[in-house]
Each structure stands twice: as structure tokens, then as C-alpha cells.
Length: 329
Figure 1 (cartoon, rainbow, N blue to C red):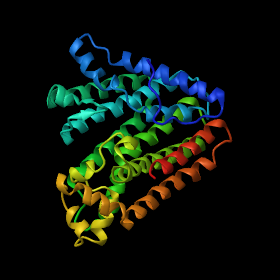
Figure 2: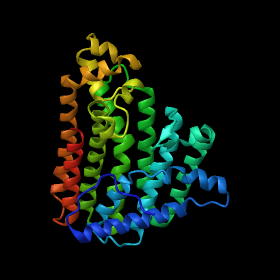
Figure 3: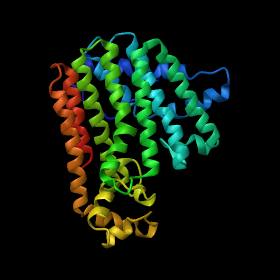
Figure 4: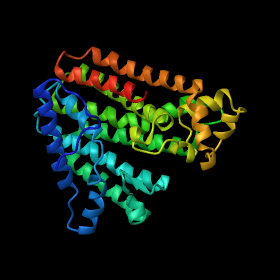
């Protein structure tokens, strides 16, 4: 049973579209078998988020990056599964830290069982990823370790918050780069390395994928304010209700902290004030500032992609850049 990619990415080249579809199906098969355990409970808990679906965005990045070398190389699918297991393991831990009751439309593992089960299941997925990674060689192991270090440091920085002398916006962008961008960058690097793509292509793909990852998260910030439930799949203002200081909120607090909107956004927004906060924020210049930041990250990605070999996968990456901008409104 295969999972669709993050977007309905229009791939005009029929051969590339088929290669990606085949790769996604192969990844899904190995992903499920890689978490099988002699203990039925461990298997069930590990498959909880896999079976809830998901975007498989990072898988898509690995498969597209592999097109710049030998996309059929035996390690490509395994590398994509390593990346996806790492991502899934981090989601189990995130839900515990965020006390999230729902993930991907289903009860989160911590809600279905408890925090201990969720944490240990995430650890189990990290262990399974390491087991697969061991067959891919020391260079891939080192990249994964460095990526994992960034993931953890990003989470720590987010938890602690910016220092008194630190720009909150710069701190926030750095957290996004570490927590989200780093693993998407590793996806591009894995695909390039495992397919035998040239070193300069590997570097370009890694940088471009990280920039796309940051831009995607900034798009989520904008969607939480600007979209309807039908467009985004979640209730608008969710971040505001939880007191999460996303980029538009940080811009407001930096420029208009004493305004009515600034006071509303200084902490979690009560249900009775959410509609007012959304209306004011949608009309505030902070939204344009946030869109400009997103566009700057997409432009970084396009610059690196423009230097890649002229093959259908390059067009697919450029199409994805366009989509990241368009989805943010």
C-alpha cells in the first residue's frame, strides 16, 4: 500500500512520474517491514503513525535527488526509509512534548497509550533506522548523526527560547532550519550520494532541500492565519490558541507590541478573541513580511536548483518551489 507524496506534484515527464511512483511504493513496503517485531504490541505501536498516512515529503526528496545519479541504485530506497523512520520517530517525541492529542487525523500515540509508550516507540524507530543505516556505509552514518544532532539542538533551542540578546526572528528561523530543514537537506544528500551523483550536485541538492524545508514551515505559519479549514486541513488560529509565536506573530510583537493585536498575541489567544486576532493579523503588514521571508528562502532553493543538470527532476524541483509559494497565498 503506497502513500502519496506531499503534494500532487505535477510531473510532466512520464518516465520520472513512474519512477517516483515505483519508488514510493518500494519505500512504503520496506518502511512497514522494517518496524516488524516479535512483540505484537511494539509492531502495532510502531505502525501507528505509518498507517495514519502522512506526506512522505522527505521520501519524495530522496527519490527526486537520486535522479541525478543512478536512481535504481540499491541503497536509494533504504536511505529513504532511514530518513522517514527518523522523521516518524521525532513525531512520537514531538507529540509528547507538545501534549498533542491528535496526529494525522488519528489519536497520537501518547493519547492512545501514554507518554512512556510514545517515547519508547520513537526510540525504537530511531534504532531501526540505525540498523538499516549500518549497511549504507560510514559516510551516510556520519551525515545521519550530524543531522540528528541538529534536530535535537533545534528542539532544545525552541524549548529554551531566544536569549535576551538574541533577535527572536533570527532565533525562530534557526530553529526551523535545524528542526525541519536539516532532515530535508539530508534527504537530498542521501538521494544524491546513494545514486552516485557528482559532489557538486550533492551540495546543491542539500542546500536547496534545506531551503525548501524552511520555506514549507513558513508557509504553514501563514496558512494557520490566512487559510480556511478546507484549505489547510486544520482549524485556522491553532497556533494562536496554543500561544506559538510563529513568524507573523513575531513581526507584530517586534513592531506593535502595545497595539490591540500585540496585546492579543502576547500569550495564548482565548477562544473568544481568536476571530478578532485573525482578522487583525490578516490585515497586518506582518503577513507580507512573512511572505517575503518565505519567498527569499524559495529563491535560495531556486538558485541552487538552477545549476543542476537539465533533466526532468530539475523541473520537478522547480515546480515544487512554485507550489511552496502558491500554497502560502
